[in-house]
Amino acid sequence: MKKYFLVFILAFSFLISCSSEDTTTYYLIRHAEKDRTDKENKNPNLSFDGEKRAQKWAEYFKDIHLDAVYSTEFNRIIQTATPTAQGKKLEIKSYYPSEMYDSIFQEATKGKTVLVVGHSNTTPFFVNKIIGEKKFETMDDHDNASLYIVTVSGDKTSSKIEKVD
Image (cartoon, rainbow, N blue to C red):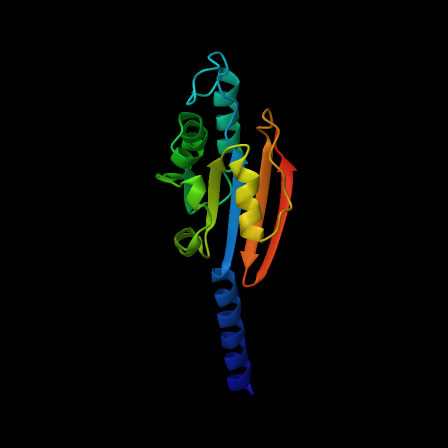
């Protein structure tokens, strides 16, 4: 009887460990507040408030395990991602919105917990690509506090949005 119980416990433990390896969690945010003083600047830095928000994001993610941090190559995106990445001792990985959630990205992030920093128009679109439906619209240009959380476990996907001020 003890042998069967031990076999059952081992099998159950194996199944639990396999299912958790297949769970991928994406945290997706838009960059923090950008410097809007030069309307012609297509690649502005963060404003003072944006720098403070980037630090708030780092504080928010302080106790959340992250395997990777992704950013586009724009100044404000990198500057938003940097405090969190530094706090986690992670290199920021680049992604291109035109290639978001392709098979390469899916394979690289499978079973991991990932932060993706993007833009007001790409972040909701990225979430929609992951969940396979058009659930979220483009963000307001002044919305820098929305956090999308997407969990993919096997063929089940869940998503939610929170405001983090």
